[in-house]
Length: 253
Ligand SMILES: Nc1ncnc2c1ncn2[C@@H]1O[C@H](COP(=O)(O)OP(=O)(O)OP(=O)(O)O)[C@@H](O)[C@H]1O
Image (cartoon, rainbow, N blue to C red; front, side, top):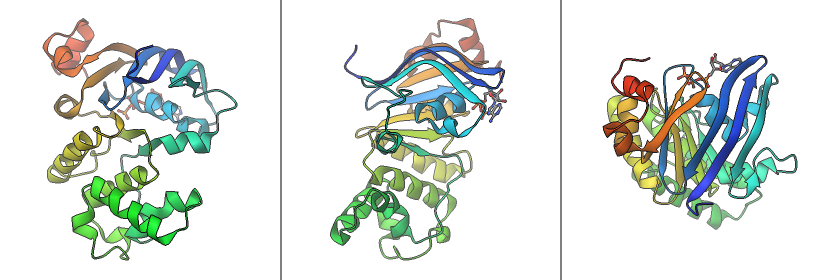
């Protein structure tokens, strides 16, 4: 196996009841790269992303078969410790969802859940995470204020800081800028690029221009199938499949 592969799937399928949402997906996601899952509405992007950290387990009708690996570990192995696994694979959602508590407590929350109580340690990690999320300078004097006092873009960076605080290897982002204005979006895009030096980023976006701007690899899906993957500049310049070319040229979706 290629050393740089951090997550891979083999003949992976997903169903909501009778409806097949993911069809025989075979792909690799690469360590410390930004991977963008793209495609028209309803093609299965979120389902694929939410299958990676097994968020979709919470949907009773959702069933999978085939394999998905994180390193050598099968993510769907019955013995997998989900709490430990989700510490390694964090997630940030479309709408920022801060908890109803202070800025500090939002970032410290995951650490406390994992049993870290030492005040100095918590302060260190909160500071570092907020710095990594490019939010520290804006909030360092008001860490005790409610997270709801922040703007939408700041709240999203806070959610990224919260994900970073538990020291993940992979960060999954589901349309993280779709609720934000262009300036906040630009900040998050810049942040994602910086984060990829330390973390593996997998992002779902319906915004093709965004995927092209920030990703190293693109994964184009259509009606539950993975149609084409490749390094972003190559795929943009010379897509191999007609459907990909049609999507890139705005003729689909
Ligand atoms: N909870 C659910 N129950 C039943 N069907 C679902 C559920 N969630 C998604 N689906 C269906 O699965 C398919 C894939 O949906 P998914 O949300 O993964 O697509 P998507 O590419 O992320 O779409 P969008 O860009 O609109 O968010 C769609 O046909 C959708 O209707």
